[in-house]
Length: 284
Image 1 (tube, rainbow, N blue to C red):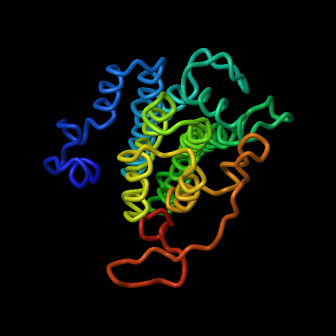
Image 2: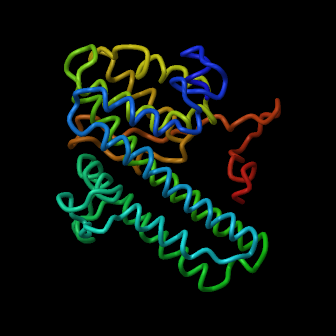
């Protein structure tokens, strides 16, 4: 992966002297050596469990492409996101990603009083799980490419909303850091940056390099917090999320940004006038 090869000068395909395919496990194991309460548990949640949800949705998508039914993958994805102890809209009970999203979304005024205090990201993801159930029940995948495309769009949108609490938590820890160096907040900043940077490396290598310097190799002086957040906001479209999806932190301590049109991604030297990412990735 880019970070291991270009920053740590490791053999291509390695990260921290381990195969890049074990990226999440390597980070979690490294964090056990720190004396930071709960950081290794949070790392397992946002890396291992998050990727397990993504994997189950990918398995569902591949089954759909084969015109097969994969309800078990959908059920596993929902179980991994929500967790057995979770109560809808509750930030106290629950241990998995739904609860993380609730805690993060509340900091950004994303909870809806009319919907049992559930934050927008969780509402979207749960509604999308139900929509996938309907598509499977209606044998949408049996329609060939058209049916697959419909399911692909739903799954891609779930991935985007799964990223929202990671971004919100990164902003939260950036704002909480009061001194430069390697304190607890600095470690959480690095952790959450590592959770989203593989996505950024794919769609915006220049922004990825800037994030490495800010969040990984540097000390992130609190005076640079605004710059760090601006760099993060600049890659929202790259991760297929929006300023509205993230919201405003703590009533305006970090104002909600404004989504601005970005230059469409170039393909092998061809510069399109319109955003064609979904077409190029087979989602439309």
